[in-house]
Amino acid sequence: QASETFDTDVITLPRFLINSQIQFNQKKNALNHNNKFNVVTTGEFTLLLNSLQFAFKFISQTIRKSELINLLGLAGEGISNATGDVQKKLDVLGDEIFINTMKGSKNVKLLVSEEQEDLIYFQNNAGTYVVCCDPIDGSSNLDAGVSVGTIVSIFKLKPGSKGTLDDVLRYGHEMVAACYAMYGASTHLVLTTGSGVDGFTLDNNLGEFILTHPDLKVPVQRSIYSINEGNSYYWTEQITSFISSLKDPSKQKDNKPYTARYVGSMVADVHRTFLYGGLFAYPCDKKSPNGKLRLLYEAFPMAFLMEQAGGKAVDDKGNRILDLKPNSIHDKSSIWLGSPNEIDSFLKHIQKD
Ligand code: AHM
Ligand code: MG
Image (cartoon, rainbow, N blue to C red):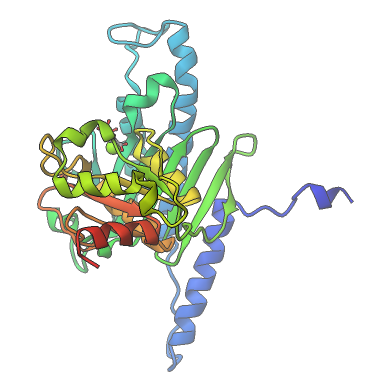
């Protein structure tokens, strides 16, 4: 039978979302003992996710086309294309794609983008969602064709709010969803809405994200560390001694040192950590006293996903990332995330377990 080798019953992202919505409504109604009313979600979130996946596909295609455009000499500062438009750098294009998609989705009231200094308020959108994003994370890797990604956190406006800065400067644990897209050998989408993590892979021919990694769990232990060791001169003694301990065979149960892996794109380093396990860190150092990665659209969404996959995410002091709160939209934090075993070793080292 052909269908034994050819899957004709694939779960696309829209199908997955519709199923999740039905399950959510059933659960809510089961809890509604009095049965006085039927709880039904409005589908607003499903529509928002639909817009997000469009942005991911659009950015993915733009990145994949960009190398060829570069080869033809059409890209670069001051160089015009056939119609006379100046080719824009991918960072700018990614940002524009993201902003326009969110604006068009109508469900988004507030948007924070890494590329925009100020909070964006969509006057004409009646929606109740707050989206924070890094449209193209790891862009220093773009010219070498190395994996980059888009990272997104999603909050709801506070009850009764029409959309202010207060709706954005929130604790990480107030997020309602988080996801990232990774533009690598394939385009992946990894999503949480607070009940586990699911991974999808873009089928370019169908133009759909297909569920390939249902209920993704991070391995409990793996001897891999991922950190920019070029910064070690600026680290504190505590961090230097912890990373040294990972390299000391006599300190490991199997007498083998940890393996170092560092792409330099957070999305790629964290994606590997989800699948293989280990730890990823970007600590504070003398050069970056507040760390490098931004809370709202880098640390928060990755921490939410990591916890939902069974892992942990803390800062240099051992505080849970999701219990932090930014004071301004581009605030940074140190971060250590990954397999529970590896993060527990770090917490033990700094005596926070
Ligand atoms: P970006 O948002 O400007 O691309 O910077 C964030 C990136 C992360 O993807 C990555 O983890 C980190 O910066 C790498 O920094 P470094 O080059 O200092 O190791
Ligand atoms: Mg970034």
